[in-house]
Image (cartoon, rainbow, N blue to C red; front, side):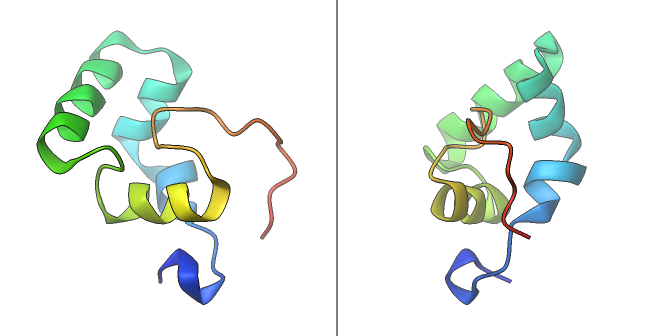
Length: 70
């Protein structure tokens, strides 16, 4: 599902091993995510794009307000 359908991008936020590791500060995760963002674009994969549309932050940034809209 995309963010335009009103569904939260749960995969990027909770399950993606690259994005979760990068946001947690893991060096390997950050390197992989930076590579992905350079290849695919500023929003990354389709789940990263959905996360950007839904939360307003790119996949490499933590969500400021932890009140999730599920």
